[in-house]
Length: 370
Image (cartoon, rainbow, N blue to C red; front, side):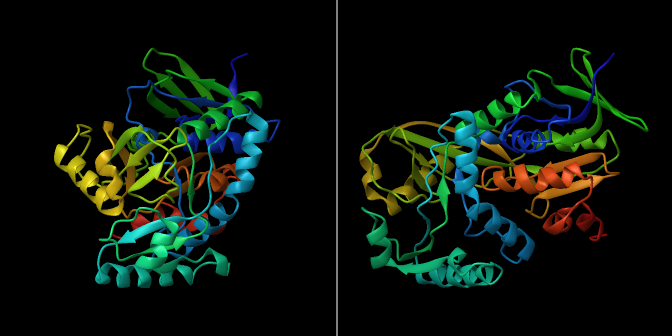
């Protein structure tokens, strides 16, 4: 008898594996993940690995509340994954910084952090503003051009590759079928199921379909009559040689990996599907990093690359359930929101109805624009 899955997930990256892990706790479900070839556009290769609360949810209470719920449970989720998989996520949660280079930036940042903080449930979730002296106490070697920073004690970072490894390992252990090199070219919907076909003609069937295929979500959803307004956003990451532990709190500009190498970022470029290295952007990233940490001028840059993030039209995540059988997830926050995806969103998908804050991130918000 041909196997028909209860849930089939197209896209085996951070988001797809989080959802599969959450759903796989329901032992009676038949679940599969299909993943394309490695030469496809993958957001995860450009992921900086930050678990980041500050900045998320400006002018958006639902997004801010979700970010807070996710961040305050991240250490518990980390423990769950590490104990179950035996994989060290290299998770560190001792706060993060956003640097300001003049008084205007500092004042604007303070207003923004205050506005977001009003949405939080817990007082300790709020970011605080630090002057230059207090920032230097937290960040050894800080450059004099930095006038201050915003600091959130709950910000942190991890290895995205280790997170993906742990989630997939647990999925497979919990009887999820993981099928790599299955590049979907066709989706056909009938009254009772979805049929998906790969390039080589292989066919799989499922009662419910979950799209977590990054930028490919747009073309896949169009095959079942759904428009997803997303586009690529290019970003560069640089990696330095390994150095001694600099005791740095993470930021969007610099963080140190467990192996000692520094990761430098970041950029936001609207250039379509171009992933070539832009030397001017690389130079800007290096110059800004040196303003923050002058010691970087003595450290060799080993490599750089560019990748494409998934950017919805209004910059906010898309979570939608259509006809209780088609579930669409398009987001650029696969690391920060992994606990929410594995726990709350998987439960929402399981019951075929959007619950809580997820209702505010459906595709309906784009229809209201017309």
